[in-house]
Length: 299
Image 1 (tube, rainbow, N blue to C red):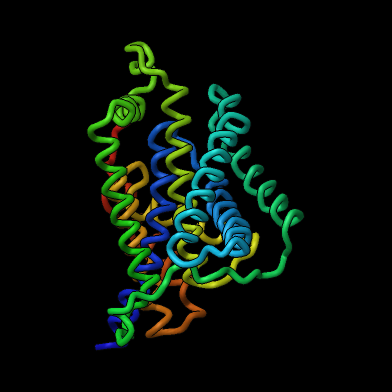
Image 2 (image 1 turned 45 degrees about the vertical axis):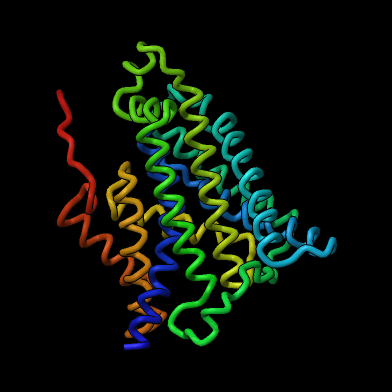
């Protein structure tokens, strides 16, 4: 039973990171019907930003939770700026182009950002400091670590705050209006370009939070982590129903548990086989995803 609980919480932790990333994917897709394949690289850049900030701040004597808060804030701000700039440079000029054009641009930006960080840093794995202190009351607990508890809690809080933001704020209502009918929203006075920019900023900030937390949990980082995590998070978004925020979270958790239990009870070699096999099964049974809605196209 203890081993089962370890796998359960390990999968919940992994799924929480996928969920944070998948929220960014599904928000962008819901607004402009674009799969932002460079989103994983924003996650990676956030982690590297936190590493640089943490290294600089540790020389000033900071440690523990204060170091995590400041380094995490730096990562969020820097990644949000990257997300905003990415949308303006790579996607906005292609707003009226065929749908394949922004998709190719997204893939190009993903490759560019990977190589940019590779040249600026190194191809080797770098040690990432353990920014999350162990809780004293969890010293004798073996089934879950303090860092896992923090990741799960931050994901739950972020999801709740994002839901409240979209449901009750003015910009959140504008985002829902643009997602439902961009042209009508524009005719009614909604500033669509600002809504899209805010969407990219929020998604990038969530990706940065995930990058910082998981890097501190794992203890290492390299330039390629964004690609792998991005593909898995995109899979989670599709699995849950792309365009649905609850679906993105559910898809991330289901994918995390699938990988964790497959690794624990079968073999780590089959981790991806079970994950993508589950995706294929869900899409065959329900093409719109677990919580996605099928929509009829008028002709």
